[in-house]
Amino acid sequence: MARRPVACVAALVLFLEAFGTAFVNLVLGKVADNQNMSMAGMDPGAMAKGAWGAGIVFGLYLLLCAYFLGRTGLTDRGPGRFGRILLITCAVVHGVLGALTVGLVGWPAFAFMMVVLALIVWTLVAYDRDRPRPTTSDAPPNEGTQSGGGNGAPAAA
Image 1 (cartoon, rainbow, N blue to C red):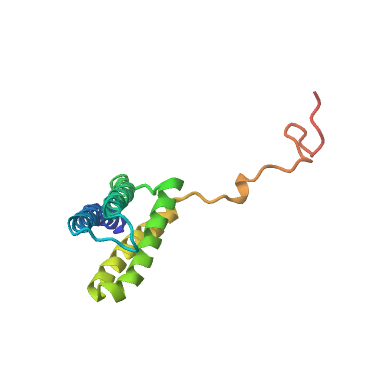
Image 2: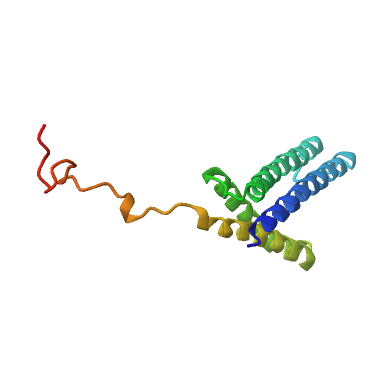
């Protein structure tokens, strides 16, 4: 199946997106700082630092998601609970940002966001089949029967 290559490609795309997002935010912060731009009377330095901080935090978030996808692709084992939650939030973020980019940036950006969303969801769905499911044989025995009696009667001590 193609789940390992999809996970590796998704990791590579998120890795590149992390640096692209951080770079764009750093440039926006520098522009806001150089032109003394403010919004609603906010300090321009605060605007620049906020853009830089957001770029660093979001870049690290995407790098962490890329790590879990890369580990999934290399080991061919699904991510654990924390990794799945992180990747689900990443998929939701890409879906919301994809919806916003249609009007703000255009259809090519929307298509990119949807491709990334599809790669993440495909990986999550492909590795979901490996997760153990509880079966009826895993259920605890009834309290009325104990081992050793043979006929359901309590065992002699």
